[in-house]
Length: 123
Image (tube, rainbow, N blue to C red):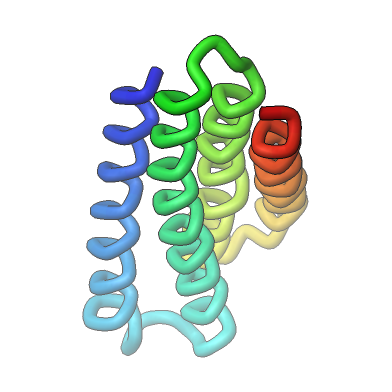
């Protein structure tokens, strides 16, 4: 699991950089300011949680046999999909109903951080 989370974090970080560059250079002239800000929020949270996945990889390796870091990792992955990707789609399509999906990702992020904190506390 350690290698999986490290790889997922690394790929997610690379995607966040690429999507941020795409927004800055390819979308700036095409999207309204509020939609561009929405896209950039997705990029920012994806990068935060890419780094969090690297921390999860470390925790999984250090606290072997403990399920909470693994749960945190999968919650961060789910959070990225539901939070960041719903914001990307919302910004690119203008479909406002996609904003109803975004809070699910936020809840997953919060739950992931709580799992990580509990894992540290209990170890």
